[in-house]
Amino acid sequence: MNIILLPKKSSKASIWSGGLTYEYIIHPKTANYADRDFVFRISSATIEQIPSEFTKFKGYYRYLVMLDNSLDIEVNKEKKLYKKHEIMEFNSDDEVTSYTNGTDFNWMVSEKVSHHKLSITNSNQNCNAQVVILFSLDTTVITINDKSYNLEPYDLLVIENEEKENVMLHFSTECLFGILDF
Image 1 (cartoon, rainbow, N blue to C red):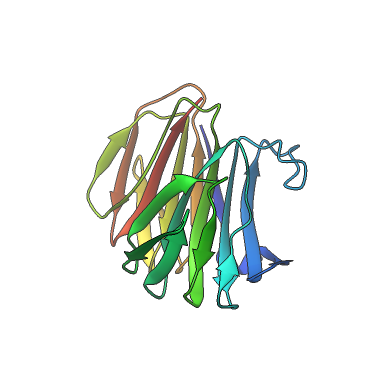
Image 2 (cartoon, helix red, strand yellow; image 1 turned 60 degrees about the vertical axis):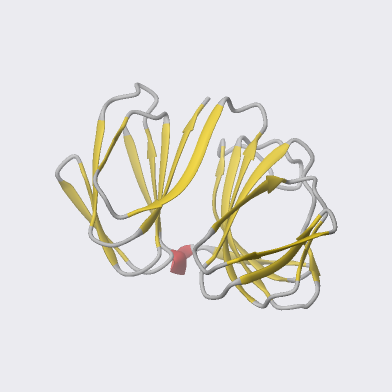
């Protein structure tokens, strides 16, 4: 099992049409965002332009969570409203237009991946997924099999668990909790 801590302050910004995006991780490490050959990618973006057209990615499923605001959005011409920290799920080749400024969490997963799920939790979890993602919404302590990690807001912990060992998790506050099996 490999545990990777990716602090928000260590992520590098790049420009997208509606603001800035900060990539935390792309998997596999040899993948290239521009080539769209990744299995999954986790980032956080600022939405600074209204309206903003989201970049399309054919062949990917997407989870989006607004971190500091509600989200007024249109998906394939259908208007929707998501509360702060409410999880939005959509196909990444959908036509998506945002009418909200703010900062988001973004998890893109290849449609080739058989199982993935994102939720918000502050309760104990017991899982054996191949990849576990833990994204802090506030200052928090995450305990993984009796070892504690102190996270600042918007830090990311990734557990690579190829052997599918049993992993016990405890959260001191609410976090985004994602699992992925290839």
